[in-house]
Length: 404
Image 1 (cartoon, helix red, strand yellow):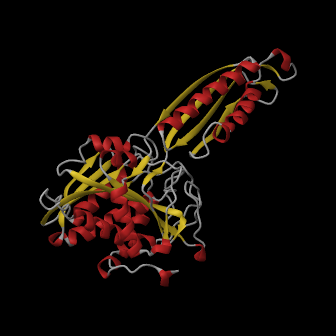
Image 2 (image 1 turned 90 degrees about the horizontal axis):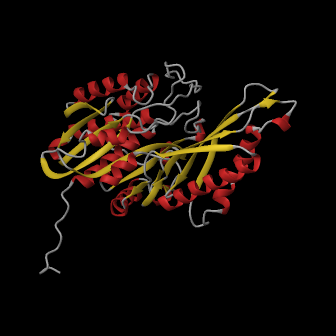
């Protein structure tokens, strides 16, 4: 695998040890959304060490900084998320999490390290660079509100950002490959909660009760027909009930049950159709058993949509760097609030491969055993540097009427 990897320029190869050191330090001290205080301090210190301008906290627990090139050009934003997950680490790594029950199980430690590497490359070459690069280290991607808070703190202005870029490390894609596509690329996540109310009773006298557990079981089964029978086959959607809460003990019929889940869609009409069917099915099932219910739902961010024109240019660079046979173009039903940056500015977000089954690196995202091949770090810096450098150049003027 190593011999087949794309070439990385010497200036970025020289950053590899620091990339790994940053990533491993951040991996050992993961912090949950809106609690990234130590992470924020580390990032601010590193950005000051590198000599970036406008280094400051944003969005409560995030950070930002700027590299100003010596030549005129556009401003490009590079975003990295910084929070971790409430997952107990079981990777066995020597630099495993030192915070019990908290882990970088989705690669945000790698995202931060790559962003710091890009910053190191950019500051060393700022005299040859046009425009400016705005770095955003965003908190609370795994929760909600992080991207919105960064935007509210003005990261898209002063200077005015024209293009927004970023990457997500992938444990599913082999090292040396990339996944990107124009249009909808990540789904909009809609969390839902259904509270069922029946009537409790003794397990030996079920005829005197309305068993909320039985109602919940029928409802879960019925909800699974929505995507298969109500959504057109040409559309994509996911409905998952991930949590069920009910009952006190085995000989008591539960008075209530709560179902918590997620809906993933690329468009508002499909989301609205699913929610309508959830309510209709819950109404029918609960009525059939003599129960009642309450439904609550919230969509935390819109779908992530890659700008076609920007993505076409990123794809050209990917074909040159990774090679045509190493490009995947498969959208995901996962969610990413990078979508808010891409609503505000044209841009592109992509997956960078970090799976290497040849050496036993084949983990899954959000899993206690999540691991990546750190050889992906310099690849991420190299490719990011190429596309950032491309987009920094001033946009060519439109042809005049006479020229047309």
